[in-house]
Amino acid sequence: MTLALLGLGGCATKTPETVGQAARAGSTGAERAARAEAPAAAARISPPPPIDAALIGQAYAGARSYAGTLSCTGCADRNLTLTVFADGTFRLREIESAPSERTSSLAAGAAAAAARKTSFDAGRWSTAPGRADLLLLHGAATGSRLLRRAVPDGLTVLDHEGREIRGLSGTTLTRLSQVDPLPGPMRLAGLYSRAGGLGAFDDCATSRRLAVAASGGDPALDAAYLAIRRTPDETVLAVVDAYFVPKAAGQVHEELRVTAFVQAMRAARCDDIFGSRP
Image 1 (cartoon, rainbow, N blue to C red):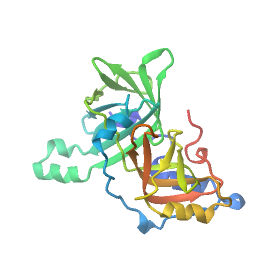
Image 2: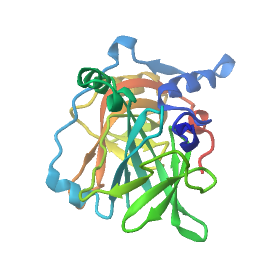
Image 3: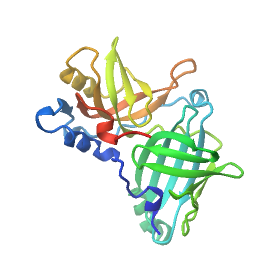
């Protein structure tokens, strides 16, 4: 029994780690798009920006968060936290822990915990036609997932045929008492532009337009944009690492805080990375 049945072990959709490679592969020869890349030494993980807890309830009204641990014999545990937002988007955090954390000594378990792998996914959710109890997640990193509403207030992970998964325990995610916005950081690809001194990012995974925080981010994104654009209002495809930061009521409910610029490409599209979206 492997977790690949859930789409957790790999899929046809390109993962965030390979979006830059995909874009380069699609822009070779005479039609190669102008691009700018951050040097390898520039890769970093910045601490999360401070978030006013009082804003979470305002910014994410109608959102729900669920969490659980998927496990099976010989498999790495997958600690999942899923938040579905009222605008039809979702974010998912997955923390992988080794079987040794459950079975070995305390010291070995602590060492394994330190090596846990954390990954994120984001995309859009929908209900299945004629089945309001089935939730479809269309993610950028791991493709499609299928879940079924469970009594009293949970979501059960199913296989791609809509069946419960044998040999896997903890498949029902329980609803959390508070919304977890899962701010990141996560790798995002989107169409970036500037107007009136402000940056805007059209996220490829969710089709949402997000304002880019004017301060506290990585200035390399704007430097790259200015270097490769041909007209003042041109849109370029950018790959960045970023946090989602909630905004006060009455405004767009969140903005992006870019922590690291990865790559920017002129004359490229979201489909060049992800293919056609559902």
